[in-house]
Length: 117
Ligand code: SF4
Image (cartoon, rainbow, N blue to C red):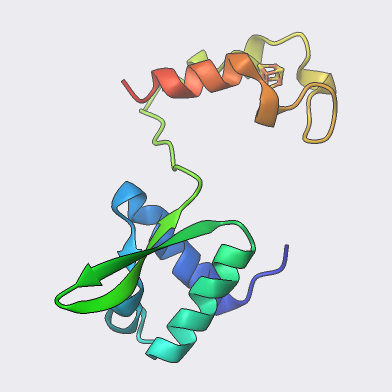
């Protein structure tokens, strides 16, 4: 997937904003881009399946709340040592697209979810 520099900046901002997201109209003040460009970039990120654009009424005007589909998981200091991958017998055979993959591993998913406690 290819990204322009402005798409990277906007996506990074949206991801960092977490579940509350960013209002599309805020892109102008937060990143200094005009509203037409902000709209174009947001639509492009939505088309790439990276964000959700949810219509919201803000101060009497319609705009979009931009929310990342992926969550950022903050790994507490030291917790990385408990990552199941380090002791996993499949580590050499695990990669995206293979039978064993971090994207479909229950052990890894459970460990990541335990960090959210
Ligand atoms: S993602 Fe799962 S299968 Fe792959 S190395 Fe880590 S624990 Fe093992």
